[in-house]
Amino acid sequence: MVRVEVQVRYRDLDTLGHVNNAVFLSYVEQARVEMFREYYERYGNFHFVIVRAEIDYLHPVHLGDRVEVVAWVEGIGRSSFTLRYEVYNGRGNLCARARTVQVAYDPERRAKRDIDPVFKRYLLRHLPQGSP
Image (cartoon, rainbow, N blue to C red; front, side):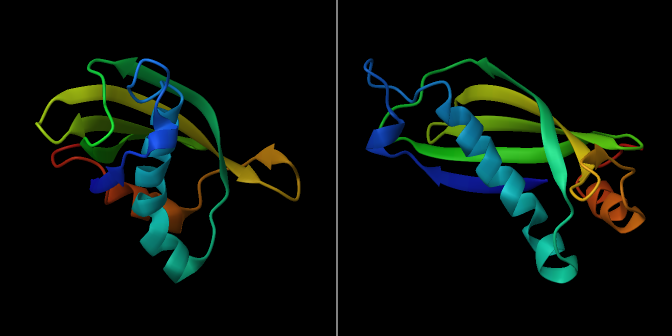
């Protein structure tokens, strides 16, 4: 599990003065990048593509809010893995829940591939305690 603080920028806002719905994808992306930072530094890139993204918006986020994104691995398959996210504001309100599905990708063949065993072990470290 990782926790990332995100700075809300003026450009993130829509005409109603709260963070635009599409910007939440950037917020969860920052958490995803942080989750894999150590792996990339140690082993290099493991290519994957996002094949699904879903977000439930529960509470607005405004300029000046401190935002924290919590991310963890929900499940691991043969060639895909699912990440879950929760986005909180500085007052502890749960503002959004999100899920992304990633598929391991071979850029040379332009096709999906099985998850590498080393990367799978890394993913297992980010499963919540008590998960298989």
